[in-house]
Length: 292
Length: 312
Image 1 (cartoon, chains in turn orange, yellow):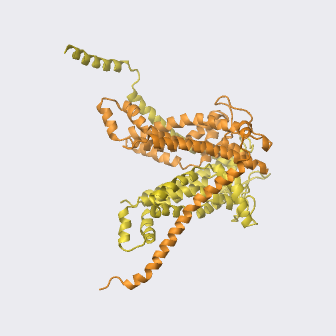
Image 2 (cartoon, chains in turn brown, red):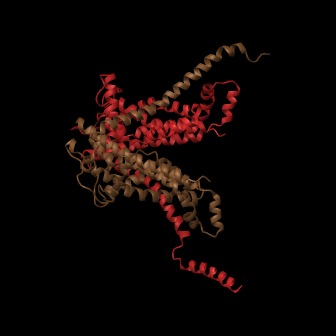
Image 3 (tube, helix red, strand yellow):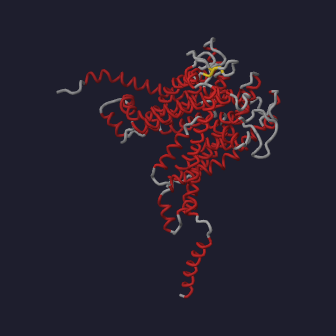
């Protein structure tokens, strides 16, 4: 009995192979789309914005005249925002991760916390803005301050930091903990002096990526009510302020053509800041991450 | 001998002294403190839900919930305001559908190329570039949609309005594409090699193996990634605020100005609707609707990836 009709197979084979090759080409083209879009985006923004990007642009406050408009208040404001977001979100995120990885028992409360964190990561950022507006701006009467905006942003990036810190802590091998216990260290001493130092590179990498998300985020701050036009620098965390994405949004939504160039220049500053932060994250990852 | 004895004694003494000196017992305090930190993420969710429920109730005190759900007009700024959520929902769905049409084929094809065809070297170049694409702030995408994609599209279709659904829809698609690509690639890579080799042994080509063997085995992860990405598209704010316009309507036309749920919240927040007005409370009702939409999709994605996962 002949199971395979060899002549039929031989006849179809060239077509099947040709289809394979064509589809491989199509898959490759689709992959290129992402790269091409990224190239166009960078090229457009660079050519539009480079003309307005100069020393004055970095040193001037926002202005009604496009040629005098500058980014000083927004740039300093973004740094102020980080001053609040970085400690708050890192402390809460790493604390939660330590609890979940080292202390939590396997029960319904732990499962609930974990499911809750993954759902929180999927809540649209603008909804966090509504939370910030109601709780921080109105109920706690923090007004439209750096503190109110910073706490809102901290809650927004918290799930990202928790997940990154959990992975970093999980990657620390059991042997290190056992050795520490064997030397007579208590659980907390082991966590503080053995587990955390070993997990620091992973935590920092995840933390910087989360902070770079906070720096680029606009929607929650619009809802919290951060002003888009400001001509002074904040002195304390209770002062009001503006940030880079808000300033860019303000310039983008103006009808005059000149403001689009100013917006592009602002975007270049924002992207440089993001690239700088991400390179630090990559550097930490490559330099300090040990493989156990 | 004498010396050693005192040494042992002094170490024991030191341990005892150290123990008695400590006022706070870290071993007992820290777990509780860390549990409180973990509880903050739960309180955040509770805070979001309570905020939305309370403020939405105040809104429904002034506007009937039936009208909110059934009326076909969203005109909060008119002299006789009308609050029917449908036009905003349709605006959001238009953006989501256009984004899906762009992101699903490109994202899936990218995932297949990276996991099945590309060499390790190519993967190492392309994956970071996709990460960059995913990390670009949405306001930058919004600027790109308004100043580049819209003018290009208007050259192609002169009837296109300055603000429309097409341009932000396409750009939202580009924004969520890396998410589909990277999550689907994870799902494809986790299909064991032995299954592929079984298909090759039967004489299947690489494409036949991919389409008929690998894709079905990874389908739960792929579908979950698409649902998650679409949930992101629904909640996307700045791209649609900048390039989508602010005219809520029920038409299926993608060439004219629209408004999404998120864009409405931004419009009210950046204007000066006073605290306590009906318009102020309406953003919470819209936010509630948005939250329910994305929550359902996130739960659906988790359900799919848990329920239909193939274990090898």
